[in-house]
Image (cartoon, one colour):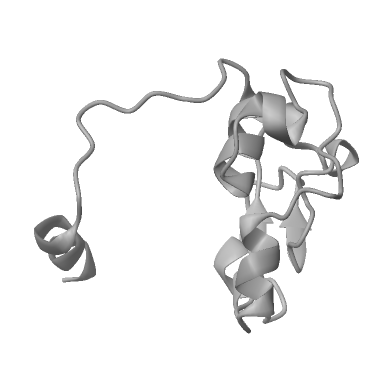
Length: 111
């Protein structure tokens, strides 16, 4: 029922263009709402400057819990994209219960 409601009430973007052709730069643009020349990450391997204000920071300031579950090395915390996230999971444990972590519950693992 939830997916059906999303389909009815959602918005479809038939043409979407990224701000940058690399993983880190495009994610930095999504999370800061700015272009690569503004947030300072033109491509993978650069650092997201702490002066950028991220969506995660804004959501936390509004009292929401924030978590990210990433699956690509260019999004590793060492590049700074974890800024503002309460939980930033860059492990690749296939059996990890990510939803439990997002809810702040102890993770369950599945065999």
